[in-house]
Image (cartoon, rainbow, N blue to C red):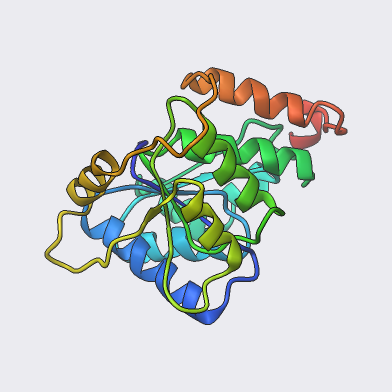
Length: 223
């Protein structure tokens, strides 16, 4: 598993955003592209569930409760079928923390070939911070964003920062090929690049540091 599209966005997504998320995840499934997300309420869960329901593959990079969520009935079945992977850089019983969620966001992008922001607040929240960090990296993943009427201000500002407009998808399109073409055609001279490594290990180290001050359960607690 790996690659595909990292679909991220608000926990409190509106109906239009939810429909967009479902359509994007279904398109990924139809094109044999994994959906990568954080497993949180809202866009994350809609994206992952929609991909699974369409016969695709989902990868959940969790910031909390990996053990509990991996034992839920629907998750067990999808894991057994080889269509769901749940991972976390933290302890299997780790609680939610803001630092942990922020660190997890780096891994969501690291596991994917492309990013897609469905809805983002402006200058606040994990979705905004994660997208901004990715856009500024030297060896970045192309970040796409939902556009159209009544999208959040954060979406519009991400476009100005260098994100790309998500294409209109249809059943006959080669989604992976289309995203690659759009990524190559769009200049990046208006983005501020900073040095960063693509190493997944370094991503995980950064995530662990973000969570280092949190209380972590003992291994014996899960036995």
